[in-house]
Length: 322
Image (cartoon, rainbow, N blue to C red; front, side, top):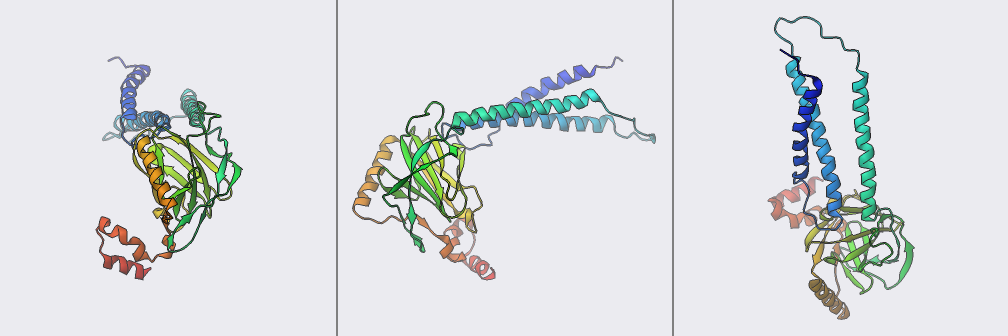
C-alpha cells in the first residue's frame, strides 16, 4: 500500500480547517449588539483574531489526538520510542508563522486604532465640575471652564479631524459614580444622553483615583485619570439604553459604579434637553448619584435583594459578620 505524502495530508487538513475556522470566527455571537460607528471596526479585528485562534486550536488539538491514536503503546510492545533529534525546517516554520501573524495583527490593530481616532486626540475646552459630598450626593457644576489639552484617548477619526464635535459632554469619575455635565446648556445628570448619529466628544476626568469609562456595546473604553484630561469621541448608531461600567478597580464599591447611556432620536434628545433646561430654570435640584460609602452594607444591598432572591435577614447577618 502506497504511503500518502505528508504534504497531501497537510493540504487536506487545511481545506477542512480553514472553512470551519472562518465560519466559527464570523458566527460566534460572543459580542453584544453593535451600537456605535466604531463597533464594526473592533468586531472585524476580533473576528479575525478569533478565526486564527480557532484554526490554531484545531491544528494543535487535532494533531495531539491523531498522535495519541497513531503512536499509542500497543500490547506487547516494550521497546523504546523512536529517537527524535529535531527538525530544523519544522522549527523554522512554527517560529515564522506566529511571527508573521503577530506582525500582521499589530499593523492591522494600529490601522483600526487610527480609524477610531486613537492616534489623534485633539485639544478641547475641558469644563470644571464640583460635587457636594453627603449621603445623597447632589452634583453641582460651576459655570467656569478652563482650557486643557487632551493628549490621551480616542479623538476625532481621520474623516472628522479638525471638525468640532456635534455634542461635548464633560464626564467626571468619582468614588463611586459618573457625573455628566453639558457645558453648552449647563445641564448636569447622572446618566449620559446623546442623539443617534451625532459626533459626541466626552472630556473625561477623575477627582480621586483612576476610573475607566466603558460601554461594551460601543466597543469603547477610556481611562479617567486624576489631573490628566482624556478624551473619548464616538458616534452612536442605534437608539437604546446601554450600560456604562467602570472597568478599573477603584475601591470597595467599584462593582456598583455603573450608569447608562441613553441614545435618543434627535427629536427625543431635543425634548430631553428642553425638559431639563426648564427644570434647571425652575430651580429643581437634581440628584445624580448616591454615595455608597455613607451607606451601611444592608442599606446599600437592599435594592438588589428582590432581584437576587436573597432574604433581608440574610443580608443583615452578612453585614453583622463583616
